[in-house]
Structure formats: C-alpha cells, structure tokens
Image 1 (cartoon, rainbow, N blue to C red):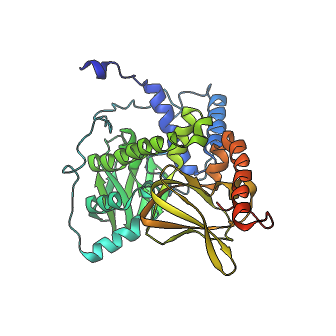
Image 2 (image 1 turned 90 degrees about the vertical axis):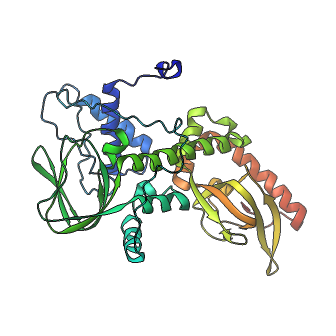
Image 3 (image 1 turned 30 degrees about the vertical axis):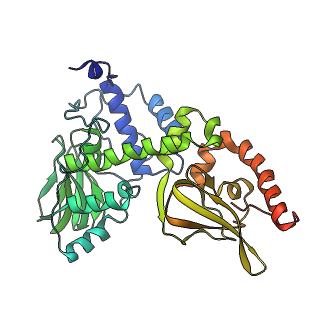
Amino acid sequence: MSSDSSRRIQVPDELKEVLLQFSISYLVEQPPDLIDFAAEYFNKLQANRPVIGSTDNTADDNQSVNSQEGDAEPPAVQSTRRKSVFAEAYDPEADDDDEGATAIFPKTDEQRARLIESVKNVLLFRSLEKEQMNQVLDAMFERKVQPGDFIIRQGDDGDNFYVIESGIYKVYINDKHISTYTHTGLFGELALLYNMPRAATVQAETVGLLWAMDRQTFRRILLKSAFKKRKMYEELLNSVPMLKALQNYERMNLADALVTKTYENGERIIKQGDAADGMYFIEEGTVSVRMDQDNDEIEISQLGKGQYFGELALVTHRPRAASVYATGGVVKLAFLDVRAFERLLGPCMDIMKRNIDDYESQLVKIFGSKNNITDTR
C-alpha cells in the first residue's frame, strides 16, 4: 500500500450503513428540503435506537427516485444485517482514463428513441451534460424478460442498473412483497453507487423490456462526472467575491446544488417581466443585460466568466426587470433554483441587498431617474 493510500481516512462500516439508509430514505421521499429532512430523520433514528434485533425491513436500492412507497419512518439500523464488503471501491480522482473503458452498444434509431423516452425523467441523469448523456445512452443495453424472471436477488452483488421501458415487476424484501413497478421506474442504482449487496429481490410479472448498464460504466460515468462537476463548481464559486462570506462546507453544498445550462449565441436566458425562478453563475462566455426603453432594448451591462446575475429579483421578490442574452458564442451557466438559493445563500443576503443600490445608481446614470427602476438582474 502506498503512503498516500495509507493516509486515507477509513470510513467505519457503521457510518456506511447509516448513510446508506439515509440516502435510500431521501431518494424514496424526495423531500423539498434536505436539511429539514435530515434533522427529522436522525431525530427519529435516535428515538428508535433502543429497538434492535428485529427483521430487516429497510427500503431497497430499487426504491429509488420513482418509488411510490409512502412510509416516512426512517428504517432502523439492524445489528443483524449483512455487512457489505465494499470491494472495488472507485476513486474518481485517481481515474485518469476518461475514454476507452466505457462500453458502447450500437442501437438503431428506433431503439435510441425508445431509450431516450425511458430515461428522460431519471433524476440521476439530469445533471449530466450532453456529451455525458450520450455516453449513458451508448452504454445501455436491452434486456428482454419473461414472466417469473429474477432481475436482481436480495444479497447478491450489484452487477447492473436498470431502467424500465415496459413490463410489471414486483419487489420483495425477505420474501415479503413491498412494491410494484408498472411500465416505468428504475432500480439497482444504490447497490452500485454504494457498493452494497442487493437489499431486495425484483421479479418480472409479465413480459417486459429493461435498459441496463453495467457496474463499472455506471460508476465511471456518474461518479466521475459528479466529482468533476463539484471540482469545477468549487473553483467557479471560489472566484465569486460575494461568496467569500460562505464557509467552505457551504460552498460545497452550493456546488452540489448547481445545474449546468447551455445557451447559443443570441439566445435569451431571462425575459423581462418574468417571475424569478433562480440565479445564474457564468462558467464560460459572456451575457448582455438589456432593459426595454421606448420600444427598444438598451444594454445595461455585459457580464463574463465568474460573474453572476438573477439574484436581486430573488432578494426583492420582484419580476425580472431586464432581459439577459447569450453573446459572443456558446454560454455555459451554472443555475441555482430559488429554493436552493433561499436555503444556501442566507449568509450572502446582506451583501446582495447592498448591491441593489449600486445597480440603481448605474441605472440613474443611463435613464436619468430612479422612477420605475427595479431589478435588472
């Protein structure tokens, strides 16, 4: 073992188990606020702590973002549950091989169209850029199933992740039926993400068709892309003066909440008069901020890499008072939606409020009056 690997922090099995159960519950519940959910989850977990030794009825990795189970109680961590081996741990930072190892399964136009339709609502893929999404589509392969076929079995090592195109599938934990997928959904991803044994069995009830991706490809595309995304956004956020008020862990949370959006030259990003849905950080390119005046648009300012816009409409709760356009080529933006903005940027709120006066002063120089001046960003 190298000196670098020997200095790595060893994560206790108990912590892995707790975090896995929390992640499963979060993906099942899909709560609007992660922090509130976490606080309630761990309070309940502590309250249930004296109860030990019962049978394991935790949610399975198949009960992911599309599960309809409504049990809000967090599963108790059982002392009798099989401990995972956590073999083949994937370190995205150590993986320099971006190309060549990703599987490619040729598809007809008809197959690709069906696959796109099947995966369009998969939460795991929403943060992927176009190139990464094409890698996902290339790497998935068809699996046709017959009634009675076992897709995954509880306790087995995770091999594939599955997206359902058609068919009915029943989910069992300890031979007890807990849920059913009907022609939509996905399962198997958490065992691959966390390198855990399968926590449930999934069996086909009807003829069906699944799209599958193997463990190595799944983790390389998704984990590496998530790692690169966080590193890129951390560097971007570190260059924003306003965010110096945030602690390092707060900037990391902010980086995880950002979503990349791309706009072509001349494309409108924000429309004057629209309700504010979020704010933007500029990754690449420049944007033009323009305000309507006498049936024409007057440019207020241009913004470039590392700058941001759209925040003041969120602070003041006003409609957008200016339009913003991509200029000078393709523009890549990191978008933060309004709920994440309110949750994560509280420490920066005073700074953003002070900026309102600066923007209004700039508008006075252009329009000669403060009348009807509102948020231009």
